[in-house]
Length: 488
Image (tube, rainbow, N blue to C red; front, side, top):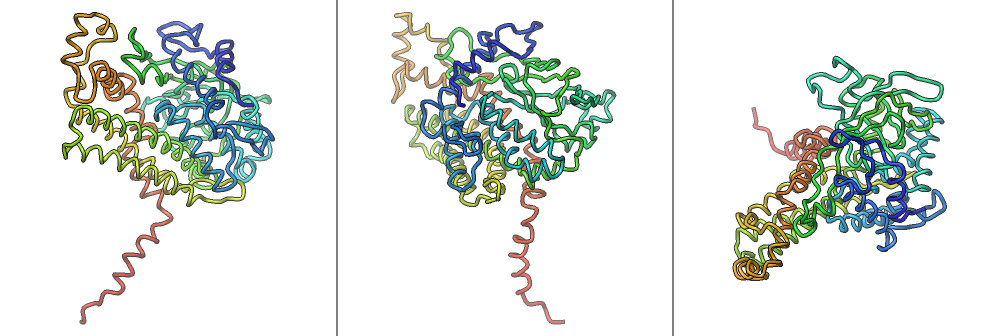
């Protein structure tokens, strides 16, 4: 089943998660100033499936039509359709709103594909069935999943099991016949206040204590689940005229608290075997390749949008003929082209497994790690090519309603390629990307949402291409072996 936006709004309105905001529990998440924008955007995601071709397709695994983001690719052609479907979604978002329902749909589908060869093999038939049933539930109910991974930043010099309270990170406190009890928190859970379901999937590399080795799926309304939301970045009264990005694609972030939450056994897929995390992330399941592929698609569409914004501004200002400006726009276009090549290259060189066809991890991970620096650099280029002109913009739409003031604006705010109104709208858009709270939040997220860029770039050498080291070194060694040695 594929829902309509109204179905989602009705669901989250009727049964919202417990969310604290400015000292109070949010009563009406749909109309709350901090959440009404993302709620509306999530609704538009569901409606998009009924407006755009290629987002709905027959799902052979469940025998009915589902979102493309839930369909397991069995061929390179299927994988290409999945990738192009995700591109359509993120072109609608202009590359923003990365915690859209499709993101965790992809994870749920991958877990299903590896229910037997990973979860069943290592954890037993119960957990294999859990992975399969959670997927079937997702295809049937089309719920909006969010996720949480990162433990609170209490003391990064020690693993969480050595902290004064080892249950700052979410851990198992008790095992019962009906499930396990968990307590702790996760530092960031984007979309938690308006999501219907939660995947909790901790970073096992930070601490291999078995109490933390637990992956599970539960409703966000489960007893003991709490969200503490950050301050909202919703636009002021001017709304869409002054904040065209913020008013469409603001995402709410929150701290996830699990206060003695009972997780039923049938909601658990990974349990007390921390040594198996590498096989899930890098090998049999290859989850790191999948979610970086999704990030790559998000940022590919964002870079196209940023390139268009750079062209729009400089052509209107008459600076697009300047060689230094052309160089900078050309740099963004290089990033676009490299991401486009990575998207289609990752499909062309996809790994064809018996149970799923997955994008080439060398390409998708490398492209995603590259974008941790490329997207912020594109934002920097927009700052450079617009220079001081991004600052002196009238306060709001009401400036154009005063006839005397409007006459001044039309004379002094016009550009070579824009009248005053077009210029103000364009530079409001620019500022919302490079200078507003939402714009800066996205840039920070783009830099660090996959972790520390330094670590991720280093991992490209130490882990991603680890098994191809000999392939590259051989190219050098063959030349060295052919070089004559001096005679004694």
